[in-house]
Every structure is written in C-alpha cells, then in structure tokens.
Image 1 (cartoon, helix red, strand yellow):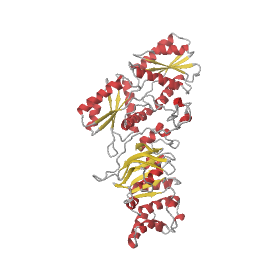
Image 2 (cartoon, one colour):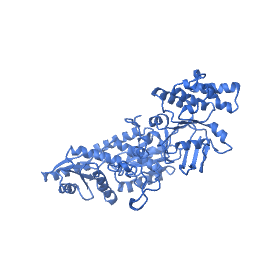
Image 3 (tube, helix red, strand yellow):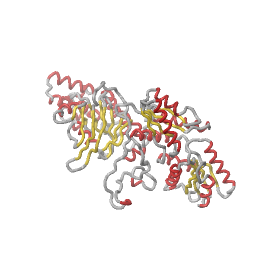
Image 4 (cartoon, helix red, strand yellow):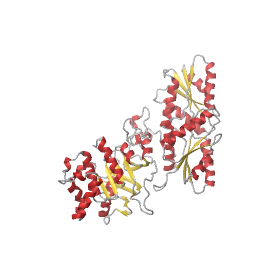
Amino acid sequence: MGLAGVRPALLVVGHGSRDADGVDEFWTLAEAIRRAAPDLAVEFGFIELTRPAVDEAIDRLVGAGAGDVVAVPLVLLGAGHLKNDGPAALARARERHPDVRFRLARDLGIEPLLLEIAEDRIREAANGADPADRAVALIGRGSSDPDACADLWKVARLLADGRGLGAIEPGFVSVAAPGVPEALERCRRLGATAIAAVPFLLFDGVLVRRVHEQAAAWATGHPGVTVRAGPHLGPDPRLARLVLERYREAIAGDVRMNCDLCVYRVRLPGYEERVGTPIALTPHGAGPARGSRRARPAGRAAPTPRAPEPGAPPAIEVAGVSYAYPDGRQALRDVTFRVRSGERVAVLGPNGAGKTSLVLQLNGVLRPDAGEVRIAGAPVDDRSLAEVRRRVGIVFQDPDDQLFMPTVGRDVGFGPAHLGLRGEELERRVAEALDAVDLADRRDRPPHHLSQGERRRAAVATVLAMRPEILVLDEPSSTLDPAARREFADLVRGLGMTTLLVTHDLPYALELCPRTLVMDRGAIVADGPTREILSDAGFMRAHRLELPAGFNPLLG
C-alpha cells in the first residue's frame, strides 16, 4: 500500500463452531483485536458452522468502502483450512469485487507470543509439580497435512528446551497419530508420575472436552500416575498482537521464511546472548561472522492527519538513498519513504542507525551517493540548496547550538537578517516567531537566563523566523522536566507543520506522531502506525528499542 493510500481493512477468519463457549471466546478475542487497533477497519467471519460467513464479512468491508482487504486466518498451524478454504473464499471475493485487492496472511504459526501463552497454560496445569517427575502431553487438533502435524513437534521441542517444563510429548485428538492415550503412555514410559494433558487449541469446544475425556479415561487405568487436564490457549489478549503482526506481514509482502524464532532476532531461553549478532556465513556456523543482516521490513502503512492540496507533491520524498562517509562507513542503505504535507512522523532507531545522516540529507548538508531527495517536489541540488534550507528547519538536540547572540530576539532575527530582511519586516518576523513559541516577553533576555524548556522553544523560534515548511526536531524532549515536556508537545501540535521527530523518547513519539519510521543499520526497517510498531515486542527487541518500564503502548 502506498503512503498516500488508506490502510487496508482487516478480515479475521475463524473456523466456526457449534459450541457456544467456543464462539463466545472468539468474540472475546475479536474485541481485543479492535481495542489493539481502534483506527483499523475490521470485520470477522467464519468458514463454517457460525455466522457471519466469511463472504458476508468481506461484503460488509467492501460495502463500507474498503478497496484493499487483508485476511488473517485464526489458525494455529497451517493445514487445509488455511491452504484451501482461505484462498477459495478470497477467490470468490475477487469475482464479486474485481476492483478490490485481497491478500491472505499466514497462520499464527510458531511464534514467541504463542509459545509464551502455551508455557503459561502448561505451568497452570502443572500446579507446581517437580519438573523431574512430570511431563506434558501437548495435544493438537490433528490433520491430514503432514506439514501442520510436523509443526506441533517443533512447538513441543521449543517448549521443552530451556523453560523447565519437563518432558513434552506431542499428540493429536483426531485424524493423526499418536492419539491422546499414546502421548500419555509415552510420558509414563519416560518416568513421569505427574502428567499434564494440555490442549494446543485456540478455543473451547468439543475437541477440548475430548482431550480431557480421553486423558481421564487413560488415568483410570494408570492409578500410579497423576493426570491433570490443562487449559486450552483461549482468547488471550496477546493473540491480538499476533493477529496484527500477521496483518502487517501481508502488507509488507509474501512472508515465506519463519523468522519469528530466529535466535538472532528473539530472546529464546538459553540463547539470549545471540540476539542482534551477525549470522556467520561460513559453513555450519564455524569461523568468524562476516557480512551484515538486514531486518525484515514491516511495511506498515501511515494514517492521514491532514489532506494535502490536490496534486501537490509530498513535502518530503526520499527515493533509494544510499550514503557512505569518506572513511567507508555505510550510513544509509536504499532509504525510501514519503511524508505528506502536515504529517508528524517519528524517526526511531538505536544509536548509529543512520537517523542523523538521514536528517542531514534533507537540507543538503550531506548528498546521497545514490538515489534522490526531493523537498516539495524540488530535488535537493546546488541550484535549489538555498530554497531547500529555507523550507527545512532543523532544531538541534542542544538548543545552545542555535542560541549564540546576546539576546533571544537577536538570535531569532539572525537567520532572516542574513536573508536580507531589515527594519519593520525583520521586526515582524521576530515578533511572529516569538509569539508562536510564547516567548514574546523573553525577547530582550540573554539566552542563558532562560530555563531549559524556554531555550528549547527559543531554538524553535530561530527556525520559525525563516518560515520553513518542514520542521525537524532532534531529541526535543531530552533534558526537559515533565511540565516543559508537555508544553513543548503542545507547541508542536499547535504549529500544525510537517514535522519529523527524531527521538529515543518512545512515549513522546506515540504522543505526537501517528506514524513512525524505524531505522537500523542505515535502512528503514518499519514504516507505519506508531502504536502498532511500539506494540510489536519482538520487533522492538530485534532493533534495540526499549519502552520505559510499565509503559503499555496499547493503553498510552
């Protein structure tokens, strides 16, 4: 989806059930998804047994104006319903709505959040039993699809490795072998005197009860073994985050490789030290690591805070920009994005990600080795440099870098004076800029007599006096106390300008910017709604971004 477009609608596809409790749990999860993405057009439909049907849900989205629909199947492991029924439903939809784009996301799959939920259910069922004496029969649905069945073995292995849960034996409640009794028997033969039979199933229903019934029947014949019936996964709110991640993947492109459990991307028990390290390219991982890893783009879409003039070019357009410093260090790698007039966009990333190098491309301090930067449609080159620097105002992290004259007023007038303004016109510019930042009464004060928050606003005034169209703020909240931080946020919102906010202050980015770009190792690795990006815990960890303790972006 282009940045100028509307975000695709989300269609969540459930299997359907005749069991009222299972359907109720589906709708509980549906509400969690709506809360996690309140601005997203979402509908829910079922493949069979329950209304509304998938086709009805699709027609509702299209009837409400959706021109692009991403279908996310609520399927744990990909089997027939994902590989057959999902594509068939979208094929029917394309026939009914030939002008609408339809995309199918992958199954929820083997993912850290899902393992966390399963681990919680296993611990609940274990009820404090000694891991040395206990085992877990992890029971899946069962399928004629060998790939889906094999995935349950992988889930069991990942849960058994490094989590202290005891031995874990997979089994199935229908279609495939081994069945529930066989899985329990394997646990007993491994020496377990306490076994938890845990359904690896999303929602309550006949299959969950069948697991428990078969486990109870087996237990009656084995009085020396304690068997506990564990809970199924259920409508855990963490699943809402996973659904939205699958939605974002479908927007980014065809995701074929399972990167969700890469030890270089996710903190898996026992392998924490590998997160963020380069992958060795030598055979079998031997020898020193060489090369670099590029993170999977998230391809998230941006909201539309203010409509630009019809036909107007983007305020900022960066197309395929790469840049290396003279010492050979690659600072930017194929950077591409647009910012519309009036948007406020955060630029996030760890130290050394390339944020400053990108900002300096916008006003021509640095020039790309490849690609192009355009400001309001004009390329940044020698002919346009003076006009570009007027249009793009940069407020540095340290306001003292921009305040060097004897008084605030003279600092604010410095730039316009160098443009040739004199007399009343210069006075008017200074007065307007100081009024805009609420510092008119500080005009004759020395800058060093101002508070930190006032100096920050004075630095903004020095830029506003040039009447820019784009405001770039570098770490504007650093060193500000809570009151000054709030006042500066109010100032930024009140200006209504196209704004790039370069910051490590993630709550501030969420407060001010509906859209976020994330940079890492010189590349844009995510572009989309700030709340969704900050809520993606795995993605954040992979790119060394940490939220303050206790801060929840879904609630902030």
